[in-house]
Amino acid sequence: MATDIEIARAATLRPIREIAEGIGLPETAIEPHGQLIAKLAPAKLATLAGQPQGKLVLVTAVNPTPAGEGKTTTTIGLADALKRIGRRAVIALREPSLGPVFGRKGGATGGGQAQVVPMEKINLHFTGDFHAITSAHNLLAAMIDNAVHFGTAMPSGAPINPRSISWKRVMDMNDRALRQLVSGLGTGNHPLRETGFDITVASEVMAILCLAEDMADLQARLARIRVARDTAGNPVTAGDVGAAGAMAALLLEAMQPNLVQSIHGTPAFVHGGPFANIAHGCNSVIATRAALALGEFAVTEAGFGADLGAEKFAHIKCRSAGLAPAVAVVVATVRALKYHGGMALADLGKPDAHALQQGLEVLARHVENLHSLGLPVAVAINAFNTDMAEEQAQVLSHCRDALGVEAHLCRHWADGPAGAEDLAHAVARLADANTDPMARFTPLYATGTDVFDALTTVATRIHRAAHVTLSPAAHKQLAALRHEGLSNLPVCIAKTPYSFTADEKVRGAVFGHDLPVRELRLAAGAGFIVALCGEIATMPGLPKVPSAIGIHLDAEGRIEGLS
Image (tube, rainbow, N blue to C red; front, top):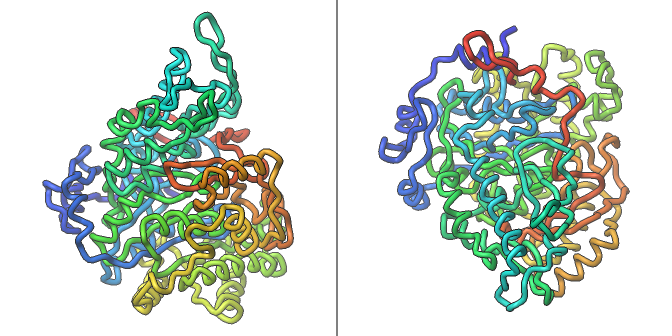
């Protein structure tokens, strides 16, 4: 069987200028990065807001498992299939992070006959957006330490209190050894202080880039980033240390969405990339709006399962940008459902109707959650060769009879657009019938809700927890947020994606558990509050056998082993 990279190399691709022209972008509207990649020109971005908008299709999934669900593959396959049935579709995806590329998950460009290309470039350095975000973040860190070194007075007249600095450094790699560090060692480098690194996709700069409306909004949001307090107890921002303008300059090109194509010629914007377990999990608002302006459908995804990605898509991205999905697609596999039903990973190739039925409760939970947001739902069953026909039939009948939603077997990985044609027809019907998505869309908590109330609402209604427990530190942080009038921002729950609980080992559609919150972290520039739950880490580690071990160059200098 051909690998993803071999399939991608065998595809006949069109010059990016032709892809752009196909969606109404003249050559002057793009800035090519080679033959197959381009950035949208800033002047063109400014004109897209006035164009008629297409329908937004959100692709999400059940909680991820080691067996893999293929959410990105399904996003691409669905868009290709919509194109096949004569509907204009534009893909809007997040950029891959080097952390999972070299870690556990591998790349994020889809697979088989449902990929965006050139997959090697997209999965690795691409157009340098993540490097720019890393540099902008670390520039701010350097300027904070520099202000401490020279005792620079902040607007209040007092210098920064070094013990209060909350801004860590970042890098786009999984490296658990960098989670906790002491800086200031050596002659002339004092004061000593505890710090560490997060992964770039957890940076507030990443979130800001993905939520900013334009360059002016970007620079204003950067200036609002909270980084420390001065010795008088006043908050210190990136604007106070004079970093916002230079950070914006580093992000100038990174703010421009990247245009590529699928193997089958469907245009795709790949831009921004916050994780959904530790950040808000959605691609950039600018890229999504471009896709809506240039296509009949903008097909996008939200990170990990619907309990994290789709929830944050609704309450953070859509609320911030004034968007509303016309339809949501939940991706599942027979293998994943059996795993959620209690089967061991090694046994997933064996039939087990009981485990599958238990796993279907997890699928039902996600469908119910999406319906509670006012979204029409379709289910995509990503088919694998190891599936039993009777198991596939069990899933399809359960969706139809018990959940009241359409479910479709999808074989886009092997068969390309034809393999997702039934799903495309269903999505188009649902979207066409939803004539006013904004009126139907119903977030679970109102704008301006206190963060603890919002947190409790999401925990009880989405994760089915019985209650939320704040650590002593989180209690103090909540009191401080309320005192400063900042407790009414949306909540971004950071927790394991593998369970409805904060414990990744707990499978199934459980309810009545506790959601333990150890920290409330203000992201003032992004405009939300991060609630860190359980053991979640904002700097992941590599697995015992990382994907990097299998990646190498062949005799011709071509990359092998990337998937």
